[in-house]
Amino acid sequence: MNIRSLTRGDGVVIGAAVLLFIASFLNFYESSFSTGVKAWDLLGVVMSFHLAGVIAAALIVTARALPQPRKVVGLDLGQFGVALSVFAAWTGLWYLLGDGSAGGGLILGFIAALVMAGAAVATPIVPALKAALIGAPRPQTPQPYGGQPGIPGQGYGYPAGQQPYGTQGQPQPYGAPAGGPAAAAQQNGPSQGGAAPAGDFSPFWFAVPVARPLFGEDGSPSPIAELAPGTWYLAVEQRGPALVAQTQDGRRGVLQDTSGIQRG
Image (spheres, rainbow, N blue to C red):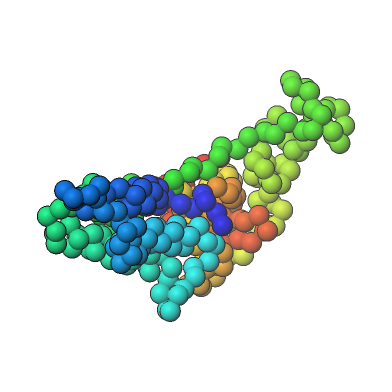
């Protein structure tokens, strides 16, 4: 599971689920004859309202974090979770309107369920909610084991005076081939599409804000890989608004949606 694929909308869903669970321990109905009735005293209430909302959030977050979509009875886990969150909010509304003795737990739970359902439905269409919850880390130069600060190239396993990453003072991201982006782009030769790179284009490292498909250079509509947030990829060529990207295992493909990418 890749938690870096979670979005801000997923963060709102998680927060609302926590609030909904807390509300289940507060008074669901107020009573002048007792200390009140909690949701856990009413099995139908806690199952159809509070636990339904918590399970919905778990399904939504799990579906987002999984590398491949999973289905239950023909429905995607995320879609099933969204539908369940709407059901929980609808159930809370009926409980709220059906009795005049609503307690703090019912009111707070309904607000939490309503926020959860709204975030679950709006995340795929609102850019602010589609943004990554945890941004990709910036490329850093790790200090080799046993290395001395200020003396590059003298870490464990590297002869004195030599750069451990194959460049002259240029840091590379973890897992980057020696020699920098340009050298990595040359390791596999020209792209399979046969098109020459633009004259003013230089290879660079980048990360995507959300999971995005990588399509074959032959124009096939089926993705050959999926780029995940939190991982650095190498852009080796630009084709109009699209980029030809190279994965860690050497596969190349076309990234059609380049909006919001983070350059290394």
